[in-house]
Length: 413
Ligand code: PMM
Image (tube, rainbow, N blue to C red):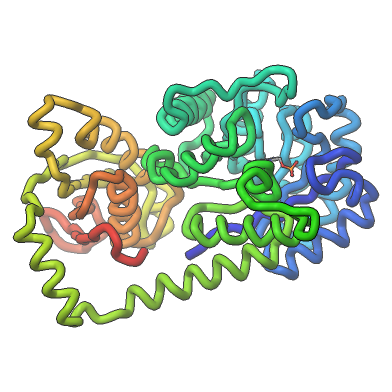
């Protein structure tokens, strides 16, 4: 499980929880090194607070805060992300060594941002928000926060791709606390599979946010101090383990939480399924109404750059995907109701995005990735995925080579 731990480094006088603490470049560098020693894989450097009501900072001032820190960190081999909504800052930050642009406006605040992301080739985090955080204007009116945020994130990704950003460079972030109430934030996390089903890797930023403060009990003798908030953040990190990344202030707690979640998942994967009670239970489930219904999508062609050989990575080739998913279709058939089934067009889009993402050596890895995309739809109980590679570099005449995997909901990842 390779979940990035993005350590927050706000080089600002006024950020949400750590404003002013790392404003001095030397203190900022020392703190970043400490975060790396605790397990941070990326340092997210920000020079402008996104706290509601915070003063906007001129890009020149923002750049004078972040660029020396970014240059020093990348010189030490530390991976850096730039947390900015300004294209000029993003461009200079990447020139100074940053490899990720983290834009909380999802590329909407600065009309040049997507072009800069495309030209620099940096990884681009597109976070969902509905404008500059403003305590005077409540923009958290949603009919269905999960489907609306999902649709708006899909549109942000679409705009980025239209501007020339490679799909495999895009990371999506639901933007917890940005124009969302605590309840809406929990809905988004509880149904994060819906967002994941868009097929892009996810970043989650809940660290020390108000939704934690509003959820945990507090009393005069037991205040909600940073230790408690960081513990709660780590709990969320454990539940989210497996996403692309978590953005946190206290790295050690989340690194430990993710390590424990990974150990549990590995343990689950090695448990023999010969336990007789389980066998009886699954037989009972099957005779108890498990339908044989399936949706099958075959021959989905995707041009991508997977393979062991350099020329495969450079030239690319066509892959063909068959997805055969088990879904109980009785409600959809009875009510003629699209919402009660899996939209095969959306599934195809999600598979396309997943296959086009970063290249891997093996079609086994690719099949696993596609299976996880299919299982991210709550209604899918089992996914049988075949990846065909008819132009594989085999030195003989052959018709096709393929890999098939079958994954059930609840299988360890
Ligand atoms: N939250 C903050 C700042 N930047 N970036 C991403 N991608 N996701 C977030 O949730 C996010 C962010 C606000 O928190 P801070 O002021 O404590 O840094």
